[in-house]
Image (cartoon, rainbow, N blue to C red; front, side, top):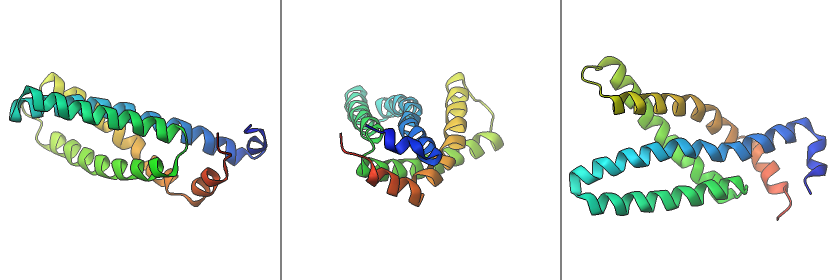
Length: 142
């Protein structure tokens, strides 16, 4: 079905990057677990479970929608990447300059946010390019 789109090398790269852009959300599952712990301590275990379940369902919907090349999910992903990148950079800078008393979970979150920040910037530029938008709109509907 996608054979006519594979003739152009740029389209092959775009399809590969669009399909794999959905899997950057897997890094956000660590964030959800981290927030579940924070909310459990702040407001209670049940609120943490409800909040975490809501975010997990939303993130699963987002990942499937982005993999299916939906325009709405591309825009939502850009919003998520913008917010998460800013939050991650602030956390990374804070941990670099104020690194006393870091626990094991802090080191894991630091590494996850560092990997996410490094991969989110190219994805933001890629998902906002005109070629991706025109390529995505020209794909046949399944």
